Length: 475
Image 1: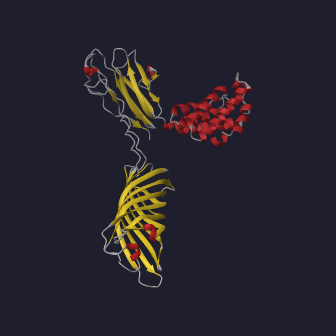
Image 2: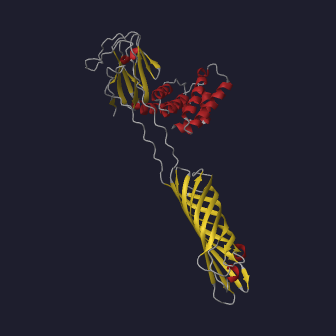
Image 3: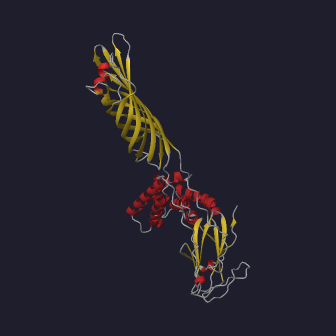
């Protein structure tokens, strides 16, 4: 039976009711109930891979009620956190737990599972051997990760969890030696720390060399140098810095203001007299850079509703606009505000059509526009963006060539060649649909190189004389 089955709260409750009373020493019914709750919550956290929190719950439960099932969970959480040495000890406690006659089935299954886990994890544990030169310093102090190590274990392979460890040796009258090593699973590593007398004595490193000469205390060259690895590089920003937008926009457009004409009595014609609001369709391509800034090019075509000029003449008007924009988008990855300014060239074609079937007449206008656009950026999918937007354009229009002096559009546009210009305002309100494609998907930062366990000893101008012997790795 695997761990998932053993962790069921009902099975644990049954097992706890049948366990030897000695395991409940000085535990009240309320304490045992609370311990069961801690265990059940620990199982839930372990299933959510919150191993540190789960371990805390199991260890507190174990202080109230001893059971092999709890030791099994403690060992599995320790292993998940990379604490292989502590995990094996917990599994051994589960295996060696004294069971009563006719023990609960979950307890037996827990011991069997702990035996399997112990056999799996034990070969993975690396070993660290610490040797010190000179030998037999009576006041020697050894620490690993600032935790003391019995000096009787100097020169003895010691099971150690994989990972980065700081090994330190010190003694009164000697310089302090320190080394940071990176242990891999199954690795067997020997670290030699050379302590140097502050009286200027020459000591060998124990590796067959002629020794290292150290200056007396107070000399600048006798000061130990740091062996701590450099800090890791800052994490990379996962957000894109560059991208392109491609899409269409559709909405309602209105053109207000005046059109120039050649009538000496009335030099302009109101646009509202010859055309009303209509629809507008556009295409846009944008390039985003520095994450929130962008430049874009738009092309729009609008068709406006016509007006009756009287005398059986009706109008129709179309407009085209090509423009460039520069703007800001506050958050390319979600809900955001955007705004831009731009400039473009507008072309307007006004056509008058007689109802009696006579020939139509056209007048063309063109000029420059200044553009202000605002909108809301909505993320609708990994690559799709929906952008409601409004735009207002200011500009002037002049005639392209001559205006008719008589006929269909004479009453609307005047009567002679015209070089005049007239101001206008264009409004647009609509929505755009865009594809957003990132151009610089950030790559995960490369892991920092592991500190070499075969680094040479510091030279005489360094300090502590720390050496690491060639490691061996289990197969």
